[in-house]
Length: 292
Length: 318
Image 1: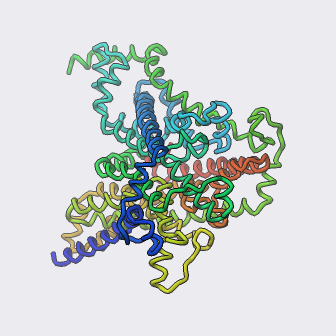
Image 2 (image 1 turned 60 degrees about the horizontal axis):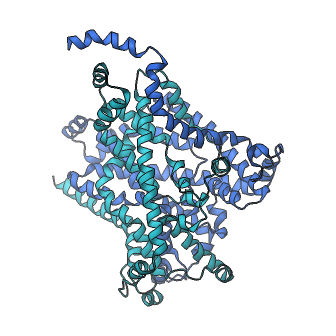
Image 3 (image 1 turned 135 degrees about the horizontal axis):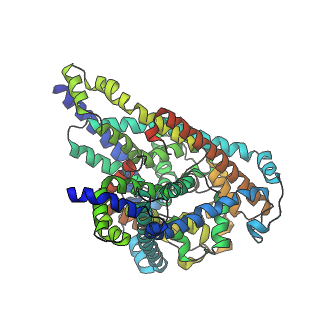
């Protein structure tokens, strides 16, 4: 028993340090967002605000038209994207999980092959811009992520391990059609699996900057992550080349604390809710790898 | 119960009658199948792009053929070697150190007698997984900023070291990128091993304890051997993806700074940067690099899967 107390003490010490390492970068940014400009100028970025000030947040709420707009774009993308994606993924995965569906093998291969081989970024870009005309539309930030092979496999595995064949059989004998079976029987039973996919997709859409980076040049369609990325880009270019600011009019970059405040505003919702949902993310990681 | 068993054979026959019965399912799958066709299969035909003198105006089919010219452009430059070295080099470090970190953290977490403590710790160290790379680049910037960064303003002065202009010194970036990568992923990736440890038979540990084996001996003789297969499989699968890199890590975190390309440029960032730079020649080189990544990557994944199939068929991808 004596030995175990020693071990526990060591473990707690170890994990406390690890936890500190995980959150210190975030604390630093929160602290900067709450520091006044003069405090930053004299002491730099510090772990505790050298001069406390909420100016940065006030500034954003007063002058934040483009920020509010970007917030709206992000929310629209996330809700439509995650919603449609979860529905279509579930419908597709349900087919793959049905043992009496005769096209099952073909469609399983159809999904698997996309995990093995792809045409490369250039081809994908040309298809999206030239053939599908997605540039500068809201769909450019929604459509490409809708179907994801990995999500399909996770949900298929979930369906085939949690839904008893008997239930579907007997519903069928009672004359229920496939759609009724799916929406009234399968979905309610599989809510934990559905939630996993919905949450993975919510995170993917909320955090996305890759699709706007490729397809969006129209400022009114910028999402939160992309606004943040552009801001940082402008600052980098200005520090590399002092003429850049003059030539592009990128002078009105917000103050340092305002930038960090925006960063916190953009990621805040995720930080507040993830602890309640993390078990689904963990489940997705551990369920997906079962061969079917 | 008996009634159902009698009805079953009739039901099965009806089900397998043909297309008519599969129709509802096919309709359900149609939207998903179309999206996969558009966004995964159509681009596959783009595999011919590097053999063409591609330009955005004429598109894939309209541009003239040009043989292996794009590959010559690519492999004649130092870039081809550099991006391959960086991509594989970082992946090798990530696989080796990453596996060590993931396994040891999972094992330590499993040692807590109180499940509540380990849950709380896990919630905190998993946090970075939920941040986008744009946010991560801000967090890194807060440390590395030349004028105000935490390192230059607080840490380095304490050690008596001159400030460093981090975003212009490529030598510093291998360790920075490694730290950021492990910071972001370790909490989440260790979960796979934690789940595997939770699945080990408790009786094994009880028996060992009766035999007088201490915790350390239990780890060496029970936990690690039980994880061996999983470790081997995860490693092989990672090797299959060794030509891929985490675009966000190598693009957002160094802020795509040109001065750092020698140590931060990977195949993925190279393909992107050449693609958007707009010239016909760079677009050709970009597509050649993408082709090289896709085709070699395809072979590697197949090989990796073949090996996994030999070691443990249940863990293979297909």
